[in-house]
Length: 242
Image 1 (tube, rainbow, N blue to C red):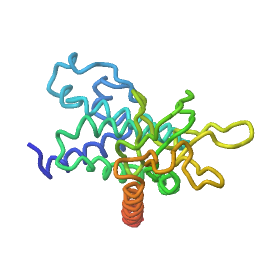
Image 2 (cartoon, rainbow, N blue to C red):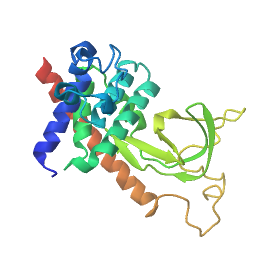
Image 3 (cartoon, rainbow, N blue to C red):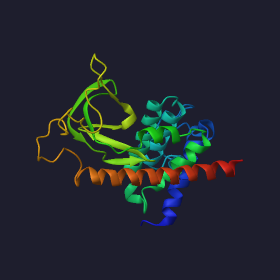
Image 4 (cartoon, helix red, strand yellow):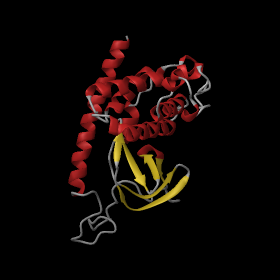
């Protein structure tokens, strides 16, 4: 049964699993994981009550995955991978949560404890804009012929889905032409001298999210407000640590 108590328990467990060193975790002491977090024994092989308590659900495996990715994250792209793994955890845990954003709250505590400042990356990548044009995503060139809108967000970062590919905006690098002009990205550019959006005839609605770009502007304003709240939360956590 969903409850605020369950949310608090899941939040506490996620923070504990990610911030506790590998060799201090019960799963390591019992030989279930190694010193780098690799799972050595699957759950069906666990026999004793103690072993089952150290690795009782897939939530633990997902939390360890996030921990491993976060520990090796040095660049924004690596942090994006960690955030996507956190989003996967939230997606597979949401049925047990009263408020799925509980996972985001736990993440803010974790990032603050790890001294990872998300604010500069959020300021550059929070905008829930439509993506259109040619991009390099995870080493592959992808052409988005129609505007691609975010499907969700994690800790304020918009998340996009293109077929089976799920990514955060900072993972999508715009591909430029030889003359230095970008082949896409964001809202389609205006045609010089016409005032029309490229690829749209006069009188036609420009491509974009349901409700038009006014709805997108409202979404953006909401994201900025949430960013300010997140910044205040991180400041409070930092003050408590001092």
